Image 1 (cartoon, one colour):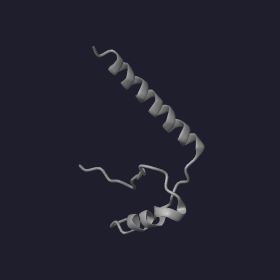
Image 2 (cartoon, rainbow, N blue to C red):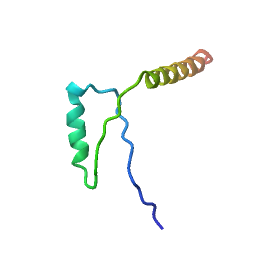
Image 3 (cartoon, helix red, strand yellow):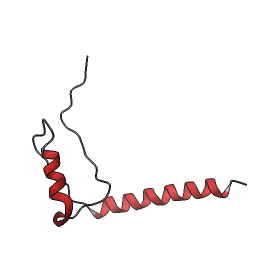
Amino acid sequence: MTDRHAGFIVTLKNDTRDDDDAEAIVTALRMVKGVLSVKPIPADFGQHLADERARAELRDKLWNIVADTP
């Protein structure tokens, strides 16, 4: 038995401005077979905070690994 998918979430590497490449990305996604709609999700400050905290946590872990290496 195989699973059925109702949709997929696409995450962009960086926030993209409406006046830059956003329309090209939306257009490309609409060209994918079976895509019914594409709706951009606005970036918010909360996500930015979460991203920065995750980066800081990873940076601290990596630093601790490097610092403990003789």
